[in-house]
Amino acid sequence: KQGGGQVATAMVALSRWGVKAKYVGKVGEDELGQFSLHSIRQEGVDVSSVTTEPNATNQFATIIVDGSTGDRTILWNRDERLMYREGELRKEEICSGKFLHLDGHDIHAAIQCARWAKEEGISTIVDLDKVEPLTSELIKKIDFVITSSRFPTLFTGISDQKKAFFELQNHTHGFLCTTLGHLGAMALVNGEFFHAEGFKVKAVDTTGAGDVFHAGFIYGLLQNWEVREILKFGNAVAALKCRELGGRKGIPTLKETQKLLATSSPSRNETGNSACEIPTDK
Image (cartoon, rainbow, N blue to C red):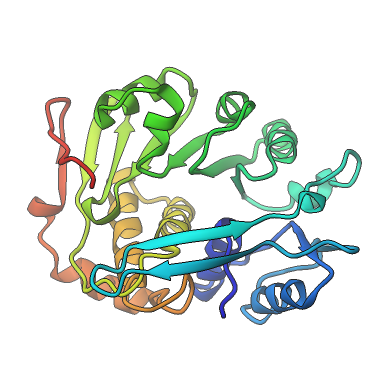
């Protein structure tokens, strides 16, 4: 049993790397809710803005991992009472940092938070894996849209991954990136298509790899790195995370990540031109 969640896991990773992080969200009034809250608090993440929803069941997932490949199937449940009601969110809590990282589970709340952040000049990042009726409205308000490999096709209806990716760009106003599992990540950098290859590791469990990639991306932004360097770092931390079961146990240290980056060949880990071919993501 481990703490999880897209944003929560990203905040835990950032906290382990020395970044001051705050989590805003709801937990259920049950044992899992208290476990979840404790798992974030003990990592040094500020949880002063977390609220406990009376009588609600905490969000949880049962994860089945393929022992031979590390691929996972997630069976999850989210109590509707964990959604924010109008008036419950506070702008001063949402806009208390340099970057705001969102997911799309509570879409109305995410849109409101993105609006507030824009008003205050705070950069926004979103982690998207599913499409909801208001997803198109949300991504228009985000500075850094980073999706799972399946999202562009789900959103556009285009089966070709690269064509779907370029079509998705027409629906956003900011930076666009899609993670590709072991194949790395692809992005549009100043209008140029860019592919950063993944790193080879013995995968035990891929759970949380995307969450840790987002943490790596945010860490790179905080360091003012160039986009190519940020994507390499994100790929490295995501790959190393897959060495352990669960979404958080395998989060690498900065020293481990730097070692992997130092032993990789730059010529094999990046390509940047509009004709670059992306292997089909299985």
